[in-house]
Length: 417
Image (cartoon, rainbow, N blue to C red; front, side, top):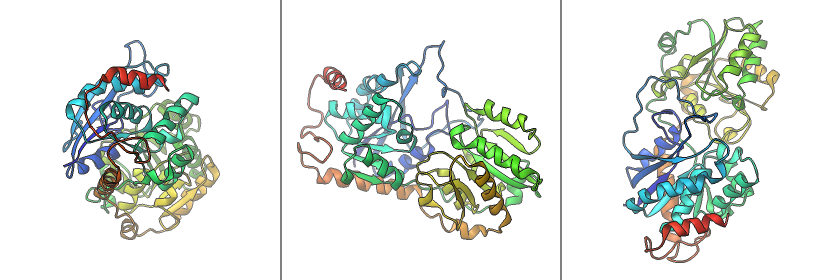
């Protein structure tokens, strides 16, 4: 059985139990057919400093990650300032743990710093490295050095997987060899996400039976188009007084959204219920008339797959991999940052009767499909690689685990960046 060490902080943790659920859902099923261990590099900041994204989710459900072994390993960091060095510092912290596991292959999730750390460790241990791009790691590359480190991963990993065909194109434009990049789309837990009774779901979340409920579920971040969504709700309120907007989630931009709601005197029809547990996501979807996701950029958003599986239409932006998973037969696609167009699309979807089971039948891809596809890609590339030869992204050494001065090798490699 193949031994796979996974290096990623794109994974649930005690502080952020809903973060990286797509990675967890894939890896726990990958662990059925391979020996998988997750190594989570956890950035720790000085007590007097706090990163903008370093917040605990307001969530009551206890954190669990059954079905997979996870090691949370701290490394020192400073918000913003240490970012160019986080990959190599994380690699040093994780190296002895990964070395003891003695993997056949290393898989990184999130290109920088996680996959870059995986690349350094793979070079040091003499094992091949694969990288999984999830969306924001390619769409939010800032600064010349960040771009250079990301491109290094794309060019030197033994294979790259992306969550959409659109993201595959982005990776290739950034330097990944075309024949080494494979689209490996997200799936959905169709046992949990399925057509449910709307009335019962509404009672659970105190949504009245007569209102038109527009629901967003996710991180409260302006880049998700939430200010435009608030603006669209304000525009629609006059002619659709029964419409209510629920922004379900937690995030750094909540104060900005609260101010927008207050300034528009919209507290009676725009609500911020806070973060919800993973078990509440299906019922929030089922309580809705439609799910909205007006993001500026996306990879393969789980919420759209989950909404369709639950039989709910979607209004989303025509960005990233979204057009690959939905079309006008299950909602509306609009351009990002266009409040008027967004309001028109929401009104159009609310005006139409949608058949839940017909929508649900469109979403059949499961997380097991994603995990099986991932394993086939990795296994296939390993079989095609010649020992000591070039598989297209640098060498896979013939003698895995051969004795060497690992720390000096890491340092030398890092200094070449």
